[in-house]
Length: 136
Image (tube, rainbow, N blue to C red; front, side, top):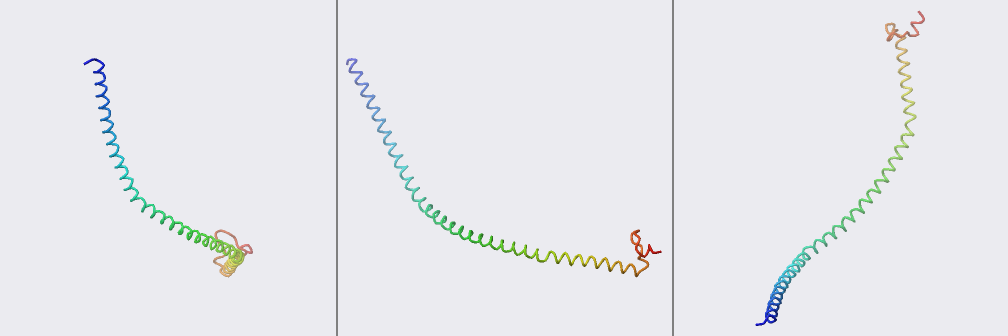
């Protein structure tokens, strides 16, 4: 055998080993692609109902949000009405109430003064001189 023939034989064996290696790699890749396809189908079977449920829940949430928005609008309207009513009540009752309290305080002071002038033992209060004490 000549050296050229040996080189061709070695190259043929190397090519044969490369082809066998490629066939093994292709077979392995086909198995992996089949597994990935099966996983994708399984994932699709599981996620499609979940996505449909999520879509339904989002629709329900949107309807609830519309209802909550309507309730908030009504609440704001009631708040504005109560606020204006309380301002009106304050304006209507504040001045008369202050006047009644002032009259009450004045009357209490006058009654105390009359009671002190009738009772001689109460003519001096806390060291202050009353009108009766000055006349003496």
